[in-house]
Image (cartoon, rainbow, N blue to C red; front, top):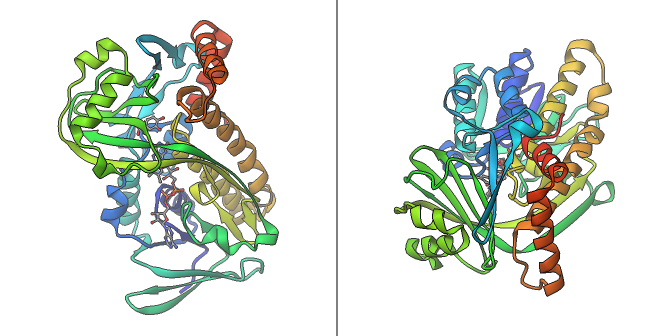
Length: 389
Ligand code: FAD
Ligand code: DHB
């Protein structure tokens, strides 16, 4: 089999890239290890920047997100019982959109299917050959048969545990990493959200986040220990702990119900450089991870897709290699800024096990500064709604 762009990974990065290229008549094959149901069952991000919504519109999958996505003009930050609001729209002119990653993925699956795109599920043993030559290819096993796919380019959209990044020789890449000493325990429940906007809560007992998907679907997170397991947390233990971490009026009005999903995510900052090796381009979590505080993971994957899509488009439409040659540099310039923001917001909002009294006081002073200083709020809001591409 032959295609123009072989895409490894059918998560949001791979699907969005495939659909955008398809709209420009550029042919792709997407190789996904898991089943469609598995990919759609992974509850992850919930807040979209304008840039991602615009890319969805350009990809022809913008109708539902524009109809059903909930615009949020601001967010609430709390410390103990104190709350203040950061008004994104007043400070930056832009809201964010609450719309689940599962729905983004579902919309893209539907569009790829309608267009007759090739998206293979259940592929195993994916290997990339000749990425440093002009004739790369990908081999994989499907239904027990070894298959070969030749292509012009390979897009490594296979997430943090994928094989694409590891295909780049260690001598040709550098990795930068920070692991945080806690995780997030997340619960999805069919209950009305506790507040009309998200609440990011710093409390003496640790961080909590009140988020949502729609009027009757809430997503809550609490900072937990790295060695906690979801089964260690009964629903009632989760709700009790959440109540202790959010302001009293919200704790009292919180409507609880059975969890329909419960999972733990570790927190990590990670970047690999460069994001390109020959004809292999890394996109999204394959190249970088942010801690979830501030909802930048999916949005940063989207900005990579933007740069790569435009580079490939320039190459095929104008015979110009400038965009693909500068892909890594352009993507990384934005990646590092979102890494900085996610690291800063995580540091501001969590209790660190080894935090000294001094560091705790500095944290409280910074929250107070953010509460009272418009310049600090503007910087936060600009990063939250998304830096320009
Ligand atoms: P992925 O979504 O990881 O997709 C990669 C795809 O590649 C997967 O479908 C995988 O099955 C496939 N794949 C992997 N290896 C292979 C292989 N060898 N061959 C073929 N296919 C392969 N972000 C937020 O903003 N907010 C959140 O609350 C949030 N929560 C998260 C919770 C968890 C547990 C995780 C892991 C991430 C979370 N993120 C969150 C981050 C966000 O979901 C990711 O940034 C986003 O999914 C990145 O998309 P992607 O397509 O680059 O990677
Ligand atoms: C969600 C996750 C985040 O990491 C975040 O900062 C905001 C919202 C969510 O899953 O809804």
